[in-house]
Image (cartoon, rainbow, N blue to C red; front, side):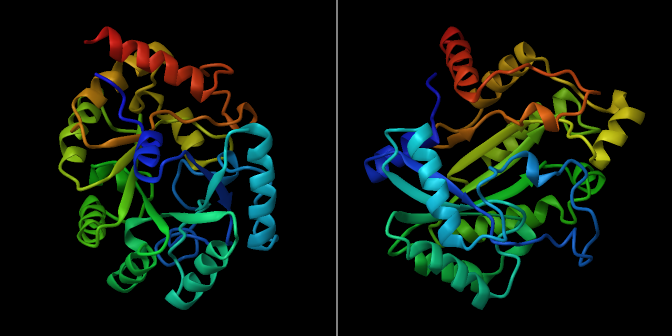
Length: 299
């Protein structure tokens, strides 16, 4: 079985690889500002997974310019770019504010579209209608942080929404023909290997365009680090070899039309807790080669 990469989706639909340029528009989350809670999800430190060039004190245009320059050096073949509203919940604001931000990014001459990372409880019919309208002239992708299919897990990690909320958001998004990606984490506390394997059937029932999978990494200073220290037996830790076996089998259970955006996380070592074993300094492209080999062996 071949890996159905989201990069291939872009090439098939738009004729080229589209490089994401991360921007930080200064959003927060309802489980941070007191609407549903404080402190955010127990596993989260946004600084661990977005680049240094994007900080909310910089204007969007400046972030885009610096991001494009960064990618031109790192990926010399990158020619087409989309603005990735990634940190926190990027629909968690009045529609008027969202229009200002998205349309500012889209007015940049090198930006052909937007990816909007958000939570399923931070979307509504009005915002989806606007995004659908925007998608008639631009590339628009919504990325939902779903994290788990189990309500007990979502409650334990402090998400502030249940799985039915995620299913409803995904279905409403699909009804408008919008491209969307769902994000899930494997190894969250309280979930057995069997529970994680069973999520393949649940995820397959969602009308998603793509999925993004991450293995749980314990980040320094988070509430989850403290929980991991006290209740380590509640966590299923994957060695690199075990995870490759797991994710290879998991992907084979998904429908062939579902694209894979990512299958593993890549956090700078300085952010990782010393309590959890590390896979070492291994880049995503190396992991991708390993996974392709595992999937070829499984034919």
